[in-house]
Length: 152
Image (tube, rainbow, N blue to C red):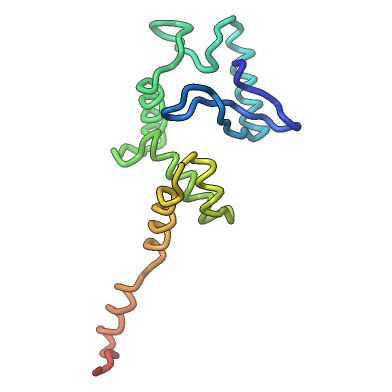
């Protein structure tokens, strides 16, 4: 809970990145998400330190990554998405895709948010988007069907 902070009127959640020792990175929270978290904490009404805790079994203990994966899978199934390609981790890909394709985001912004050290890792998302928009096979097929193929 102590990792949830307000800085310059914006909410942040400090996190411990993969392979890191400390919580030196953060994610920005929208006002709506911040409000949802605060509502959750006020309903919890306990003194446990972890932000998200187990309410079953080992009550009050920090949620494990396995538990979080299960929660996300259950939520996806609840909206009729039951496919192994969709997971907690794939939501990171969704964030990058939506940022770049629909929110006028840049590769550099996606790299920062995803916390990739090397931008070439983030470029994979951009290549996938470019491929998605590349209908070259369809255009050639249409030319073949119309008999409009040049002789050279």
